[in-house]
Length: 201
Image 1 (cartoon, rainbow, N blue to C red):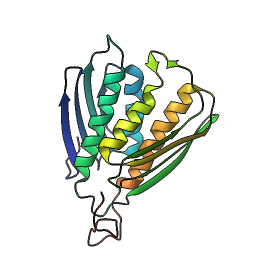
Image 2: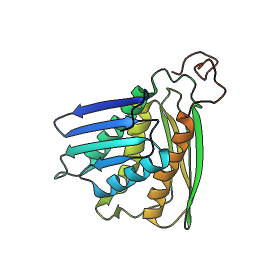
Image 3: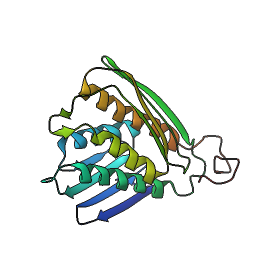
Image 4: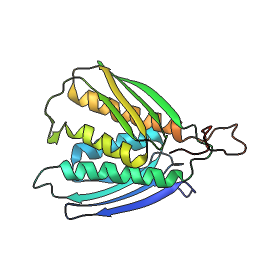
């Protein structure tokens, strides 16, 4: 991990899962992902590369039941790590939007690091599974990330047919939108919180 101030390490252990996340916001897109859910591991790798955050995720869960608890709890812990790493959020852009094409698919992710969690999720009908991954868990991951990261998150796929392309374009767009939102404003000399209220909550 790159040494910097804006980083966090969060661990969550329940009767269902054990998740460890290390997150460095001012990174280079390095990643170590081991989740027992191969497709999600691949998506988190894309998220790291496109956000330029350094991301380490280790997760073990009751996958003999299904992947739901593991996927949701990873979203929870990444959200918490982001919130902690941002601290008071002084000087950040706060907003980020990315339109990302992948072959026949076009995804849009727009977010506000507002402290007010909200998820709008609008995607075309997808296949039930990509490999062993239950695609309805995508929404659960994004909601957990939004709620625990304090993010207003709008995810919309304008069009697309291939389920793998739809999900991959969302994770890439999420990474790129987040990269913009967490970046420090070059003209924010006094590093104020980007809100006329003086707080983000």
